[in-house]
Amino acid sequence: MAITSALVLFAIFWFLFLFIALPIKLETQSDRGLRLEGTPGSAPEVTHLRRKFFWVTVATLVLWIPTCAIIISGVISVDDFDLFRRFGPDSR
Image (cartoon, rainbow, N blue to C red; front, side, top):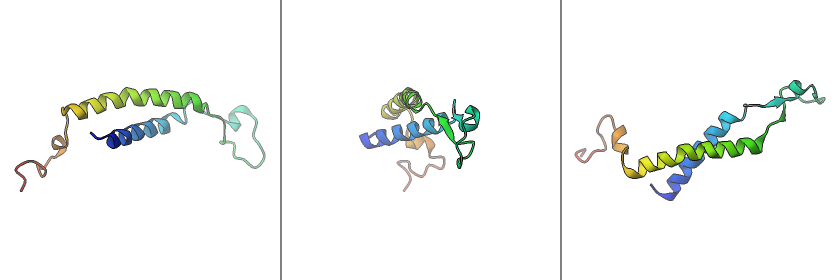
């Protein structure tokens, strides 16, 4: 696995976890009763982004490190996902 592949895998995991974590503990303007004129009641008031970024990074590392280790060790390879044996050594 190249460095670029590892960074792309990290970014995919990080953004996946971020989109999962964004709505957690989100307080809207309607929840707080402080709705500003001209904004929808569902507009976020308190997002806790620093805390979410920290926990998203921790969760990403917990999943990314073993995934990279499995890919580098060769336990799972592309050939394991080739259901029709198109990419094997005898696929001329």
